[in-house]
Image (cartoon, rainbow, N blue to C red):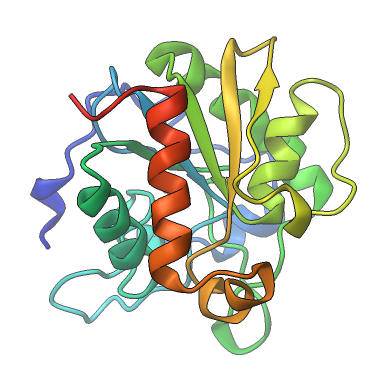
Length: 210
């Protein structure tokens, strides 16, 4: 996977955002959305991972500047939607790597999510997807916040669509690919059954892939 395989047709909204000083200090690059800007589905991650700057490919959004381009999560979520036949637009709720101890990820704060939310809202306004697939609790909380709603429990919402009238789209919470192996069985699925329900739900909301 080279960077050129995922060109973004979207104009960068702000080249050097400094709304969150802690994020600006630890990021390498801002990780903007990538993919077709007329996509039926937008996949929203939580934030770019630390990544590996020395990798030949799948270096991660903190180094590529493109969402969901890490070896584990990026490769996994892109392969999932490729199998389903959809070509989503991929982005993050928080566009900068939230550095934690020893170079690991920490959870984005509510303030950081709020600071980044206008960028996400502008992306969704431009793409105008039928469905926003939010991977993980932080991405789901960000999408609900566009309606002034809070997230009260995440796992029970997974694969259950909710209408977002202000964005004129459906929210579909998904397990984050980094935690799917942990939680999918607790929801009563194996990977195949989880994927089958996702396909059925997307087909109902969007229609079969173009």
